[in-house]
Image 1 (cartoon, rainbow, N blue to C red):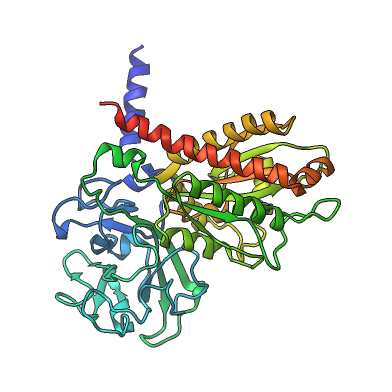
Image 2: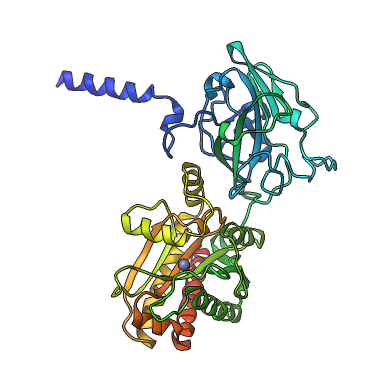
Length: 439
Ligand SMILES: [Zn+2]
């Protein structure tokens, strides 16, 4: 007995001595990361250790200006040399040198609120690591964009007030360079993701729980050169999705919602663009409309998905198919981003998915006939990634099944499906409002 308790004590001690970073969820600690640095006063990290002197893999901050490169090169695994950093937004560019809206450091918009229209000069984003892990930083400091704390080797990363993803996920890139003006070789870059989530303004419980959920983005899957799945008799997913989406938009408008469509015609819209449209519309809910396809032609029925890391083989295959348009494969970085986005909206998205799926099955069975119920599932969908609102993807039927293909082509099934989804959305929002009224 004694021996056992000694063993347990030793085990607990060993656990307690694990570095803080590895105790964080989301895989192994990054070789560098951002830190909750207390120079700004208060604890601005929303998910890390409050102790400012501890290197912690903080990845949710309450303001951009509080994000610092972590506790020195020793902790960041940076060898001696010259480095360049850039702050990017997801769905970004292959090369941190590239300007444009997704490279916050390089945009032509003004850093801070200074009115300057130059972006951030290279010197401001370059630092040198010398022997002993000492950082030399010659960029503008103090009153200008980046602060530098000599005693702790930390550089403030985020002066930028311009962003296409305000309140969302950011990516920090650190790349080795030969000289200040050298072009960055993306292969030398390491990346880390973090999220800035402004503290909630004091809002009523009612507002929090749904009275404000009035704007829905409807995303008809595929379009243009991307036909989506094609049925045995040639029915194309992109056409069915658009037709259902348009009717859904009408129905939701009738129910009092403001609606934004990511595409109104047979046009190609990239997956990144769809998310951007949703975020810029400040939508409360995001509903993506698709048709399913399976190698097994007898498979039929409806299912509703939320964003998550694919957990089984079926989920992986479906996610791969719906993601086929994504220009890049799902990397570790995307998984980190998915994780952050998922945590932010998981329970709302799950409830919305339940409500939509339940309504689809109930209403279609009552008005159309037999409908398979595959329930609510979770997978990593690129199109849902980075959306800052509860987001679901509805598979309205199997276009690979000839009977269901015929149904999906027909106006009646499209109308009933749209109607059922609209009701599901309404029920979800009403449910939130009822909760809000409970004293
Ligand atoms: Zn699809």
